Length: 412
Image (cartoon, rainbow, N blue to C red; front, side):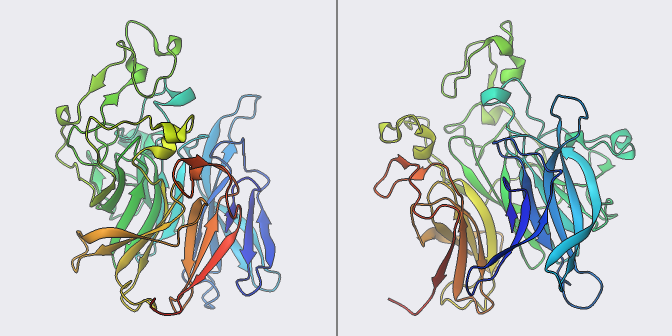
């Protein structure tokens, strides 16, 4: 697993929790935001004797040799040494990806097609201290930019790469250009998983409408023009970078009531032939919803109708827990719980309502299943806000920076 702030990849032995460092990435840049050592993927042929004992890691680094910080992301391949338990022989797979201190996303996964999939967030633009930077989730690379290996328009995308970092020949042509871009129009997609050849992703919404998406090649998922369903409910795109006549830099940030100089657009005012709505949202609310619940005080976002989804995993039909077969498991940061979503037989819709499991007062970052499917390991954040045990917001996490073990022992 990766340690974002510690700049390490570590191995943890489930039987006793013993932790060893596989590699420390000193080049990684970490500032206290959402940067550092990020995604990790194991080659499916690791320790199979095929010469592919590889581990892929993504991280932010400072690409500017001067005093200014210019974050970029690279994906690096390491070779695992089973004798020493360490990672060495680093090879850069791709460099120059967009990097930020916010909304890096950075989920890394190797698909059943032996391709690397990687999520790149919208960099946190159009909000907080990045409010004057436009969201580039709808921007697409030109053929000239691809030829020059300029990846600046990859923000807000899900990428698909060959294992050596090159562009797969069967990637979709979008606007006439084939690049690493597999899908676009994303905000902050943090979870990826496959069910057979079908790819699913979850994504953070703004103040509502976290999403579960079925990712299809070349499709547009709407951000920043649409959050969740295209229903004109509880979301209007306010483009701070286009503020006029008052320049954006002169304006104070206001998440609830943007100044009159900031142009606003209803969801229904935008259209695109490849727009694809989510399978499910967490949650869609009406325009009359009160986003300033006093129960959360200054941490009002904890009370917003979202769950902050992080990891996503598919449980196959042979699951060790009855009734959990062919479901998606999703860890959440705000709710400290695992959400289970049952898929239809076709996989292009969901069955019933999500169920909530293993709730504690923590921020759940990721999970792993034991080989028999009966034990779930959940890793928690070391700090941050989450929902309190009886509502509201709290920073008093029950198990900060821990791996929790939950074992199914039978019904009841």
